[in-house]
Image (cartoon, rainbow, N blue to C red; front, side, top):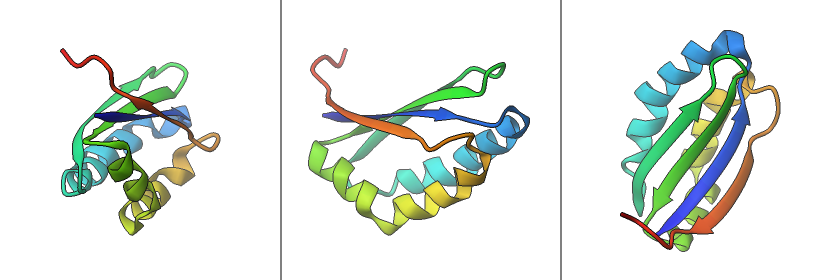
Length: 97
């Protein structure tokens, strides 16, 4: 399994809007992507700092997703609400309990 961990700084006045877009658009669309397993999103409402952990069957599926039209479409929906560009890292999942 492979994890894409993204750190995002959301403009605090748009936190509820971002949550709505994630729940109504981004996550439902992600479920149809090849290799997608699950996503967790963590948010500090006071600072707007958020982390997401998207789990994929393997690294190839995660990379293909980032290059896909789906990823670009979802990213554009959220971009106006970020203070800065998201920071992404990928990791092999070595424990899954």
